Amino acid sequence: MIGLGCDHNGFGLKQRLHSFLTEYGEEVWDFGTFSREPVDYPDVAVAVAEAARAGLIERGILVCGTGLGMAIAANKVPGIFAAPVVDPDTARLACMSNDAQIITLGANLVGPGLACAIVEAWLTAKFRGGRSARKVNRIRTLEQRYCRDAGPVLLGGR
Image 1: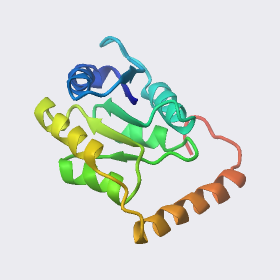
Image 2: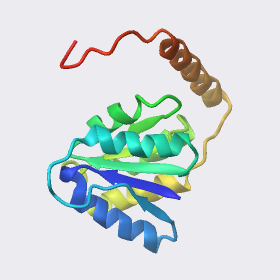
Image 3: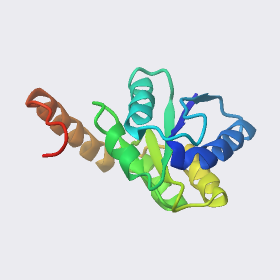
Image 4: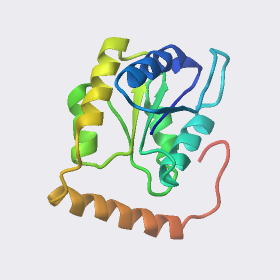
C-alpha cells in the first residue's frame, strides 16, 4: 500500500501520480487534499508519516510546491525518513542508501512525466544494507537521543 498526499500546490501532480500508481498495480491510500483549496501541508505530511510509522502503508509519496516543507514535516515523526527527490537517481538512492519510506516531490519543480519516472525508480529500488545500514542505524540512534531530550515547542519561530 502506497500512501499519497499533497497540499493545494501539489494537487494536480498528486492526481496524476494516483493514476500512475494504480496503473502500475499499486494499491493507493489517498490522504488528500482533494481540491486546490489552500491547506496546511504539515497536517497531510504527518498523516502519511504516522501511517507509515504504524505500518498501515509500506511507503508514502508527498507533493507540495517544492517538496521541502513536506519532507521537513514528515521527518518530525520519529522513525520516518522522508527524502525530497528531484530525479530518478536521487529517488533510487533515497531507498538504496537511506532506507527512506517517504519521498517528497515539488510540483513546481518536476513535471508529470519526470514525477512518474521518479516514483518508478523509487518503487523498484531496494535498501542495500551494509555500510548504509550502519549509517541509517546511527541516524536512528541520534533521533532517539533527541526525542528523549526534546524541550518545549516554540510556536511562531525560534
